[in-house]
Length: 229
Length: 229
Image (cartoon, rainbow over all chains, first blue to last red; front, top):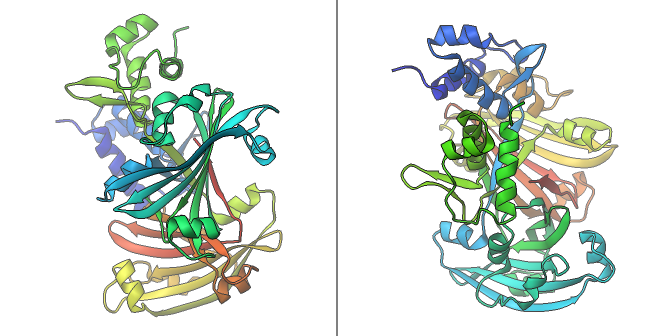
């Protein structure tokens, strides 16, 4: 049984970790590596491609392949739908629509979403509960110029995120994480004290250059977003 | 000139976005796709592999390949060294070591880092400034059982993160983001008001199962961590 690309990758990683291949040093070429591992060049190539994708080595057309001086540490963050997130915690999920209304976009939102003068938005406020306790407060605006069908849709039972994911299957997005102090509204909905530090995510989504939706997701006190890498 | 895997990937994405390939539907098999694009099967295979890695399609051994019902939205987050992060903002970076001392690990840290009873740690407190203004407060503990050379190292000029990246080139890590209220210390160092909501990252790093370092990075008021995807 021949060595797999995963085994080649693991062995090269081990050499880098243990200092046998120093940061900044040149990697042997693929033909020589294939000979030393007794495998096909394609096997080495796949291992090297993954190491490059992981930011461990860098491949330069003329200078050859080197071990990166400062490896790029990349995190892959899955962005789940909140209901799935809660169920993965082993808790029962409940959704509630607090408020939903189609309205002219206020100026601050028009600027932020790059809307046209007369564009209307659907403003939805929702709550997501884990085992009955507040988990996430959602304030969402949907551009009715881009998604007019949202105005007739009933969001009483299924949240707008789930609906959007099945209606607009793929888009560009920008996400930002930051901290906010709880105001009186957040304190009420998230069962915390005014002034508490809360973790908030904001997400803007585009479909082929047109803004679809802007959402502010505010989490219960103490929420942590955790990733392995 | 034959079609590239990137073009195949882009065309399949377009079909998914425009609803020609509906969420949940089966994908044609690779042989048929290769025939319709007039390319090698390996080209289609690479495009499909990337679409699967991106969470757009899912490949099942028996059931074949389908368009995911709920695409996994994945963010790739680069974790830069703070000096690079500040310089990318176009600001001048300055580092200061506030305090550094080797000491027995306190109980809470021993539990958190899974240290042995007598393991000692190097506790470093540092500040990072952007154009002279506080940007990030760093509280770091290094396991001297795993990295004894840290005790003799002088961190006056170069921060421990930079030193660690060049000394321990590859490890596993866990990162978590959350919000904290500024206490008197953070208020002093980060020039904000006690009680302000601050964005904090915590990171634990392992080398082959051994805990190397635990760090709390607390950012100036209003900091946002932003990603495109």
